[in-house]
Image 1: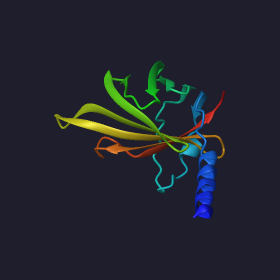
Image 2 (image 1 turned 90 degrees about the horizontal axis):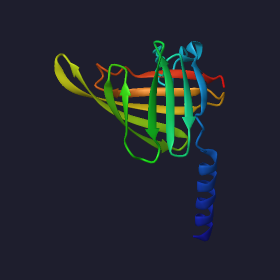
Image 3 (image 1 turned 90 degrees about the vertical axis):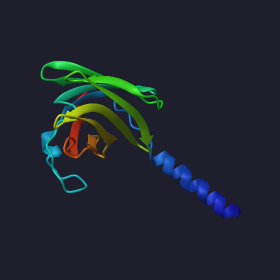
Image 4 (image 1 turned 30 degrees about the vertical axis):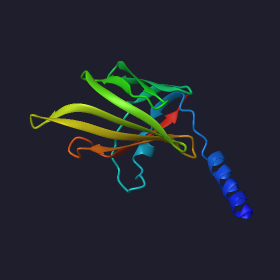
Length: 160
């Protein structure tokens, strides 16, 4: 029994040490060539989810994104303590988000109201942010309803 507990502690320590949370801070630029490579599901959807360039400030309690969209700056702030965040997307759409960690991946679950075929609909998305072995930021998006949210994957390269 003691050997089993020691083995369990060693495995747990190795797992948590190998899954350190990344720092997303920096200036990131959209990498179209890498985004064109198929994702794990084999799909290719060319989408610059956070514009052509954005600046991220990552602290222990928040992630702030300053996104260039059509010549303007859109600011989104995500609380990393588990509290809900409210941001305004282009088109004055209020978006409520909750961010959480899954090992070294940041999950951002969002919800907003919209209309589809003249009827109200709730849009729910999940964006998963991670840093790959090359140091690139990978953002994967999924959500519902499928008619409003196209699953996609964007790759960004840190320039500063």
